[in-house]
Length: 202
Image: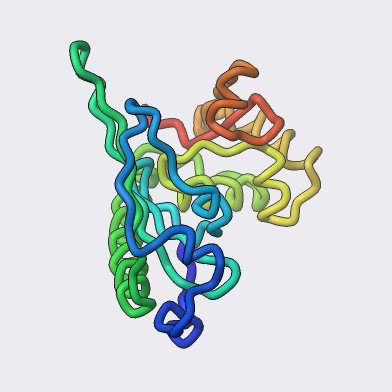
């Protein structure tokens, strides 16, 4: 969830920008409700760090320049607005953003671990090792939901074992399961699995 930047790799100070960065310029603001769109090069940028639905950090795959992207939405019933903006930033600023994000994330994880221990501590202490690993994995993801396939891949545990453990954790009321429609899966870019899991919060 946190990516280290090597500031020496940021080539945004080159005399000649690469073709992608040349097409993007230093910054651009667009109003999606006015049918404005980003240049094609914007969609070639690589994701470095997703901060939230409204903020992320991206990087040019050709020259290593960094771009900070923001998305603003106001669903006012009379005048809804949806705008986006990107700005090219130095590698040092990108690293500072990531360090600050990492610090905030660790604080949130500490608080969430306390909540999980308070709510499920007695049960967690009795869990088999595989189930404990899955609970720790889901806890570190905070409130993000994830599928069995991702858990299997990230933890290196056979998918059949993961699915069996999740069923057990559901029965013990430690984990909750959610089912998504195909349309929502496609809209939000989920994996092929329609089933998602997270720590039970009540």
